[in-house]
Length: 194
Image (cartoon, rainbow, N blue to C red; front, side):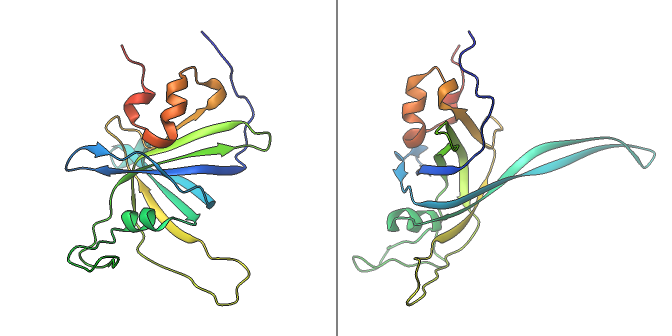
């Protein structure tokens, strides 16, 4: 059955961004923490070039997606940024957190809504993400705008070999998928069940 097909979409806004932290040891996933104040989102896929040569001459070449890099500028809640970067309070007094050699950044699922100028909504998900940037902070006394935190994320392949998922809300027939996307996305929920 063919439903609605979106034929024109130009990304204009990103809203309702959410981080769902993964615990590899217990194989559990936290319910998403929305932070919603994203100023900018960039995503680029890194390709792996595979070549076939014959007598030293390239006779065929194929580029396959290997991983992705996302850059996000946002106002992150303290819990979210601390967990992404691996701040810890082990052995420290209540309310004190530290970042350094003992920090262990947590992997996570990143999800968000992307809208075009006309309100058409696309959902995006990076199912196996982690930070590749360290802690940084910008403070400007007397500034007219509060600085956003910038993070670079690595989007790696999930167990299905996928790096990013997207779905236009108007094209999806599974209402539960749309409802759960921003708070408890798993790659399995995107696939048909036999």
